[in-house]
Length: 315
Image (cartoon, rainbow, N blue to C red; front, top):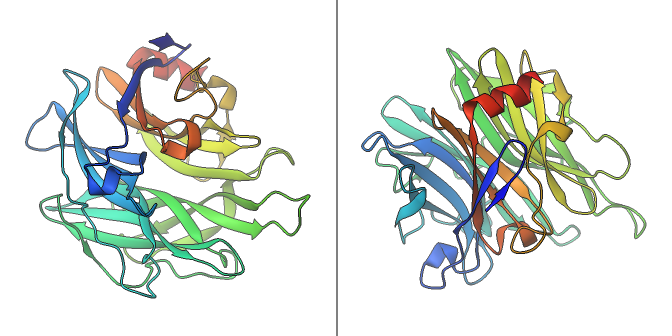
């Protein structure tokens, strides 16, 4: 167990499992949501990989009392898209929110490219039982536009009254030569009144600090007291966790130096710490995150007291 200034690492929570179809190649980034049946459980929607290295979405249950995964659904919660669809080669990066009696899952679809390695777009699916999701549409729900013309990746959706907020990863450009970075993406914001039709803002929420950064991804946003707080991943040589705070959700102050967690000296998260997802569990905040090789080696867990998180935010 390793203790950082804010977060206490509790170790590897879930590793790849060749016997489970959607976990055969790794346990990647997740989204956590409270279980309405058992108040001690957190539902984890996880982006795993199957035996063909395709991203698949599955469900596991985390028990806050034992701080372990106590149940694992063996069947993926969403099928792959049909041939030629935007998500035929993978479904990943879930963001799940409640809408009345339904769950809405925003997810990233993958299709292999020819002149570029892949294309990403944003899909939407819904479920009544949380175990099987049905697509809202076979097409992406957020069309490309002149500002976001290449593709849209991971997202975080947050509902505040009648306004739906989405912070999303968008491709800025692909690299153009061997001396360039392979790709560039950062984080923007969009809003909606129904959770389906989204209007993106023109500005960038989290942008590159300098020329060494080229990938800022996987936003996770919570409203804590009167602040919007975002955790994300930023990449130079390898991914590290980032932190930003905002009063309005649009204008953010990066405070990566306060994130309070970093790679370990050895082991599964010694080279990379990425895709943090933070869940407010009341007494504790839980951070689910990935380590080396983008989650190939599994999904980890860290814990922080409420007092520590508030001090981190307020400085």
